[in-house]
Length: 306
Image 1 (tube, rainbow, N blue to C red):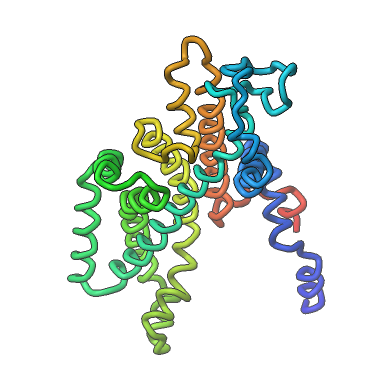
Image 2 (image 1 turned 135 degrees about the vertical axis):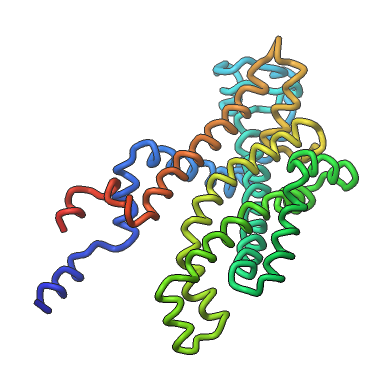
């Protein structure tokens, strides 16, 4: 019996191989992951490779139509009102768009999860104070609060991250608190208490790993929401300001030319839509993959037979 168990462990594939197999099982999630990987690579290396081309003006290519290969190869998606190639600008703009969304999600997730763990495992008074703080934040519409704050402050990348992070804290706070209230009653937590484990060890070693998969799934969906919020603020003119660019700002800059050069807003808008759609598809896959009860739906026949 011991030999068969050792053989099974030896034949078990690495964790990342199992994850790739489950991802390949869901073709929509796999395509979404590939697209998001391309977007991340564009955000990391695009400005280094194409920033000079993205800012170089060519008045001969003003509002150039897409798929006109008589101009530079970077103009295959067309040119903007100053003759700058849309293809290069979309790739360069990916960095600011993804950086703002990533920073806001990480900050809101870290703060909200910490407060939620405290509210779910601490005294009733501390829980009530934290939850009332969340109610105050949620009483203001998130986009309206961002508009008011950014109207008073300079519309910089840092201010955008702070404002968007504050508006999303209650999502993680309420979710983590609800999960902690349920997990703290399980037998393994009570066993850790009986064995004299400290509060920090119980919360961060035993409770947080159980709550974390749910928060990761929410963060994936929230990433799409934050990216749309940033695009909306840039479209309204209170987000990132030129010469910095984001996809939302590019849509706003193309608005006056919708009747004559629709592609100025179409291509960056399409990038926003595809990225948001990919995040939602990947979030649905993660919700199933991280659930032990539903994970069998994504497992290959080879894995199930094992």
